[in-house]
Image (cartoon, rainbow, N blue to C red; front, side, top):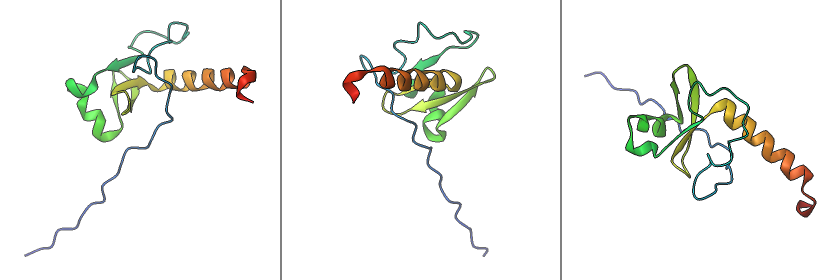
Length: 99
């Protein structure tokens, strides 16, 4: 009888936590200048066909890559995520209360 080799399980990479308003990281994206051919994000992922993203850390949908945010159970498009993190860094640098 041949022995089976165990494949190492990989865990999704932890993404930086975005501040959530009313439990959603997708609030406040109205000013985002990026294209709207695909949605900026998808909420309640565990209740949809996109739930596979929970196990892999993200999905590719309509040619765009989305990252799974486990804290809010949402998918957010990668370019939107980069834009939002950049905005938060600029806000933190311009906020005198942070110092």
